[in-house]
Length: 334
Image (cartoon, rainbow, N blue to C red; front, top):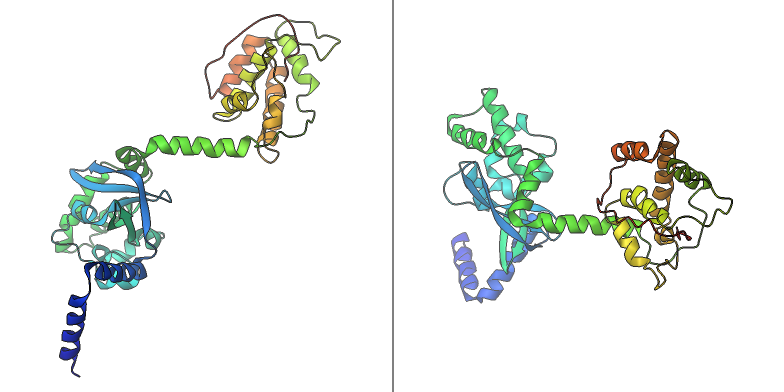
């Protein structure tokens, strides 16, 4: 059978396939070329930069992606985007970077950043590039242009990249995508959740002596109070002071989460010490480090006002709200 006959036979078999079957075959072929199909989470938008509009997405693994079609238009490439070019298939380097004269200007991490990303969004399969590739491309063409290495048919790409470079920086591209997609709100929530997971234990931890006597001795001194012989009984408002100088400055959200996990009884006391809800591998060690640092600042301070001024510089609050209730004396429960 001739090659022509084989080609006709292959075409006939393809036409006989259902649209679903053809889509499945295409999906497998694309996955072979570019890797596993990823899902774009519910964050997408349009990045407006340098006079260009590029669709952008955040994937389920938090990879920030720019749609390939908008990407190539933004750097001055015209015509239909081709997906079967040799460099896309074999070396996974975009065709607009395939020219030999550009290779001396490639950054060391170009291969990882330039690999096409296959992903799905709202049921449609799409191809994109990591957002970090855009500043890389701009740098490559700018460096090649300064070195006089560009060809005449590459000058327009360098011009487009020059405009794009004015609107972004290597670090800033991630923030721009997050802003355009609205992901920065969830990113902050995710970061806080990860911090709390490391600091707050799911189970109540055994009691261990944590707050040293010198910590309370210094609070009494700085507040102008006589240190009592009964070390257990302290003014009630010492709990508020400890919240302020320790837990509010330990890590974001920790004080609020400890309030939730260690609620007060009807009598206004806490059933367990707050530090017993800190994790043994992260939360408790960090608390001890913070206590040591705070105690040192106390020893170097003349009074409580002087102490807070120094503390605010060294360990600023993560939460500025501080309800002060200077009530009658009782065990602070800390």
